[in-house]
Image (cartoon, rainbow, N blue to C red; front, side):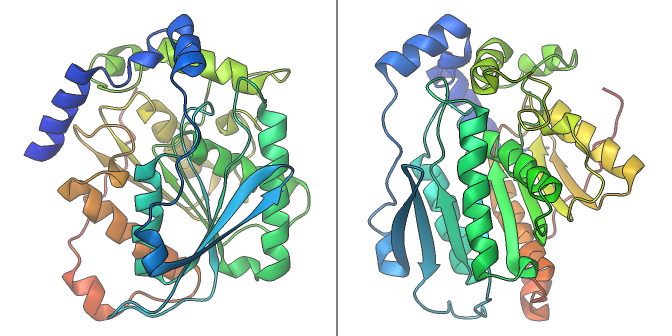
Amino acid sequence: MASLISRATAFAVRLSRVGRQFVDERTLAEHLKCSRVGPARPPAWMRRWFHISSSMRNGYEVFTVAPRSKRQGSDRVAGNVMYLHGGAYVEGIFRSQWHFVGWIAQRLGMAFTVPLYPLAPEHECAAASDVVLGVYRELLAQYDPSQLVLMGDSAGGGLAMSLAMQAISAGLAKPAALVLVSPWLDVTMTDPAQIEIEKVDPLLQRAGAKAAGRWYAGAMSTTDPRVSPIYGEIAGLPPILMFCGTHDILLTDARRLAKRAAAEGVDVEYHEEPGLMHVYPLLFFPESRKARDRIVEFVHGAVGKPWPASAASTSPSLLRHDGLAAN
């Protein structure tokens, strides 16, 4: 059963109607016209703990966040995590996502690269792909691919998987691993199982998300693998760690990827939490802390730095659920 605090938060989110912009296309368009603000800057506290710098790629800012010193009880690891933020491809990075980056980066002792990629409806998938693929090429020039990890939440999770596919297709070295948090892998929003899940999702609704997906696709088909990577070739992808809650309409995407992975020989570790909402690992629930612990452990292993036995023995284990029940 979901923790009390997670259930209370979901109730409060539903009452506040914080996700009301996803009700339909018109409401989403009005939100973007009247209410959208620029991307959040790294909060001031992060500068006490991290070296933070930025550069420009095709006119878009790319941040680098590197821990200033080793955290007690954790070893610094050479390598880089490229983090792609969520926001339905129409919103910039949020403060909660910066907090997540800071928490994981400090625990890992690894640098994070965070590109603020072009957003819809002003820009389409082709523009976002061009920016993130360019950043990935630059990272390959600085790091061995065995020391690179792609990570993303929601739309950023979909973009991370799409980026890995595009890199492989372009003949580039693939990253060591993918970490996907409630990934949006199919912008068509046509899975019939989403109809029932929508009734318990306190944040997202299909109509608004579907509109955002169409805007993001632009001239491409919404089933183009660059837009909706679930339709692409997954064989050959690196190991994947994935999380989703059952009160999240993107649950169907996570389950489909888990099923395809089992059939096509891709290593996917999928954690499905009953009763949890969208991107729960970024939040403040007991389940969130367990998920973040697993992310740290997984990334350490992926880049060849096993998690210290003492830390592993004291970290609460995640419920591992294959999530392959019939949809």
